[in-house]
Amino acid sequence: MGGTKFNDFLLSIQALIRSLNMKITLLEKNIKSYTTRVEGGNQQAVVDMAKVQQKLDETRETIVELKKFYATLKRDWYKVNDRIIGHVVWAPPITGLTAPHGYTQDVCVIKLDKERFLPNFRGNAIDLGMC
Image (cartoon, rainbow, N blue to C red; front, top):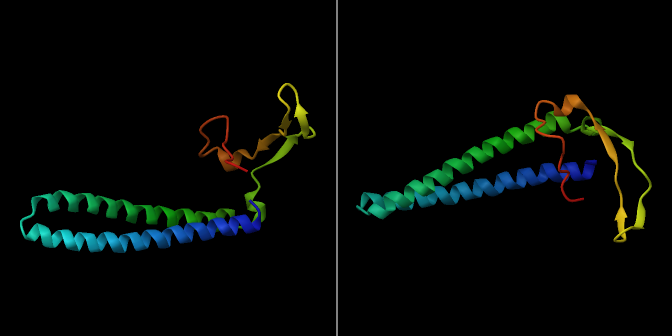
C-alpha cells in the first residue's frame, strides 16, 4: 500500500471503532430498557436482554481487537519500507487479446520476505483482494 491508501486504511479502522462505540451506546440503552422489563416480571425480556448483552460483549471485544490491530499497523507497518513484503522476480509483458478467449494477461511471480510471513503463513497462496 502506498502512503495515501495506508492512511485511508488507518482512518477506516478509526471510523469503524467510532461506529462500534455508538453501537455500544445503543446496546447499553437497550440493556437498561430490558432491565426495567425484567424487574417487572417479563420473562421474554430476560431472553432478549441476554442476546443484547452478548452483542454488547462481542462489540466491546471487537473494539479491543481493532485497537490492537491499529497499534500493530502503526508500529510495524507505518513506514513505507516496512510495507515491502517481497520482490517481483518474473513479470512478462502485459498482453492483450491473449488466446484462446482474448483476455488481458498480466501476471508476475513474487518472492515473499519469509520473515514477514512465516509466523502466520497458512498455505501457498495469498489473496491480495480486488485491485
